[in-house]
Every structure is written in C-alpha cells, then in structure tokens.
Image (cartoon, rainbow, N blue to C red):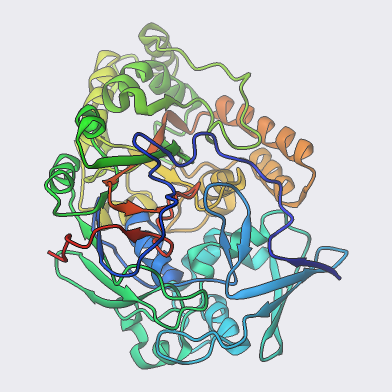
Length: 538
C-alpha cells in the first residue's frame, strides 16, 4: 500500500489571483487571532435543505459546509484535498483500494462518536434502498456523481478504519469524497429526526446548528468539541438578502459582515468605501442558455445553431458582468485542464441565424418560452437583464420568446425535470476538475435520469465515451487532450449558448480577518475571526 499522510498526491494548480484584495489583504491577516464575535454573511437566497446528501445548490451548500465535514476536505485557494475526519489514507498499487484512518476521539455535535459505523451509515443511506433512512432525495447526488459505477464496496476494517474498493481506477475519487454529499452525519440524529433531519442537521463540522428562521436565516454557533480546535467566531449567521444592491447597503451600513454576489453597478462604490475590503479570484463557474434537445425544435442542430448565432454574447457580458465576467466558449472555465483555447467563438450573425431557421423549415420563426432564475447567482448577477437581452436578440430573427420564472426551489425542480424550452442556468464547480462540468452537465447517463442536472438533456455517445475515459486517465497531458476533444465536440453539437465565466468577489467589513476563498463556491469560516466585536446578531 502507498501511504498518503497530510495531503493527497493530486496535481496542484494555483488559481490565479486567489484571495486578491483591494485593501490590505482580505484573504489572510498576520495579526494575532482572537476568539469571539458574530459574523453575518449576506447571501443570495435561503437554503432548501440542510441535509448534505440532498443539498444540490449553493444556497444550501454554503450552510451545509460549515455544519458537516467528510473524510477529506478541499484545500483553500488551490486544487487538491487535505485530511479532515480521516487523519490519513493508503491507496493500493492498483488504485482500487482506499483505506482511511479516522481521527481518534472525534465526535458529532450530539456527542456521539465519529467512527467506521457512522461512515457506513452516512454512505449506505444514500444508495441502499433497503436502508431504513434511504430516500430518492438523499440518493440524488450519489446518482448524479455516478457513484454506483465508481464504488464497489465500503467496509469497516475496524472501529477507526474504513476501506473503499473501487470498480476501476478513478482519477476523481478523492476529490469526490470532499463534496458535501459525502459528509458524515450523526446516525443518532438521523434516527431521532428521520425525514425532519434536513431541518435538524447534526454533523461534526466547526459550527453547530442553532436555528433556521422563516425568512431563511440560519444561525450557527461554535463547536466547542471540534477536532481541530473550536473556531474563533462565537456565532455565524447566514442571512438571505435577495437583492444584490440591498446586500451592499446592509454591508455598507454595518448590518452584515460579508456579502456574496455584488451588483457590478455597486463595485466602484464598494472599492472606494472606507471600512470595506474584498477578496476576489477567477470563478470556477459558467452561465449558459440551455436548450432542451429532446423538445422540438431544439432537437434540430440547425435550430440550436440559429439560437447561438442570434445572440450577442459580447453585449450580454458587457451589460450584465462588466469587468467581472469573461465570455465563455467552452463548457469549462479557462483555469481547468482541458480548456480548449483554439476554439473560436461562434459569432453574432443574425443573417446566418435566419438562414439556418429557413433550412430547418422555420423561415417564419417560432414561439418558445425563455426561463430565467429569480435570484442573482455568482455566475449570473442579473438574470432578468440577461433574459431581456436574449429575448430582444431572438426576436430580431423571428423567435418570439416569452420570459418565464418561478421561485428558486421550484425553478430548479422544473428545469431538472425538463419542463423548459430554453433556460438560463449555470454551474459553480463542486471541485476543480473538468469532470465536474462535463459529467454533471453533459453526460448521457445523467440526462437519462430525472431530476437531471443535464438540463439540455444532451445525449451523445461520443461525449459519453470521452467523459468515461477522462475519469480513468491519471496522466495530466492525456487528460487535457481528452477534455480538449470534448470541448470540440460540445462546440459542434451546441446544446447550450455559453454566456460567461464570472469573477468571484466577496466584499466584507475590514474587521473580518483570515477569510479564505476556495476555488469552488465553498464558504467556510472556521479560520475567520473578527478584530472588533461591535457587530451584533441583528
């Protein structure tokens, strides 16, 4: 067995500008940390669930990541994983057996032990249909990440040792273990709360759950028994404020400590306001217009090409993102291996769009519905404006698109069921690997199941083969070549109109210290501390 202690032997990639700040370094601070105080984080919307197994969108995941932890965790600021509830692990020479050694004495928030039985309970309840706490909702992420085709068995070697045996080598396995759905849950709490566990979460993370208010505000408190020492903050409050400008006003006035997804119109003021700083880095994300390829007329490649030619991408990026977005031409962001720089953007060409529509027998155009999300996201700061710009462009070529939206939870449920024609959606990486985009968003296996994150319901045998090959290859150059070919195929089939990759920006009060950005959408506060304590829990 090959021993790995302290970190995973993964390819390392520093994400450019990670933790960059406008004032004195928002990412880290050399002052001596102090305990105490309350941090209030203003986020885009309320969570849907606090059960890590069924958490599938950012508003839930941001909360879950502070309550729960897994065997490993993503490293802040760069790709790779570190030990977490497992202190170390061994990998067999054939890369099929992973043996994890749990930390001695670790406990869940309810005082019950983090042991091998808890690991098995947390995992088996997601896929074993005869498990007393199995549900289709809890199986969703397990299925979406194709875990049944990756994991052969999970067994307890002894009370502090767990073995995963894989069906075949998988280059993404350790990274997958760092995702929220692979977090460990308290079996005792699940047995106590049953289906209500999603609103009574008990994990082993740095913060304990206190309450979930009707407005979506979640209050957490420091875990005094945390394996790595209690966090510095006494209280962490995650408060939904849907309007980005109102979030900025709350931060400016000192009613919150930090905020997510600022409006680009506010950035000049944010950068010039005394007492405010921000962290920023290139976001591992993409926004796009998904075309439902199993619905007419979008099952016709000529119609999909016509839609792509009809939309002025540059105008959308300028008006919706400004300097904080980069036009997208591949389904993965530029910082990931396999990004194909040789791909050319499909040009804005309304005449070519009309020509293609005529070839498809739709010279007079057609009517459709354009779905857009009701709240701003890191990858889409102004969804309503983006929808209107797309609507205007489509109208110029004869496509009459009615804009439709629903409350956030319902919007996701309906899109994942494939009820839409066109839908503005996006993705923030769960882990910094191209597979987390290609498999989740573009694989035919995912499209064959509902609810599905492949919202284009794109089903290509050739793409499927490339994705499966990319999972098993460990050589970085070979993997890069595979995903470059996948980018070429994507741009040939055009299941989406790609919009932009956004910059991740997190403004905060200048007394917030040592907040560490991750390459993904994770927001963890276990190392964060507050220099001043005036900010209360209002």
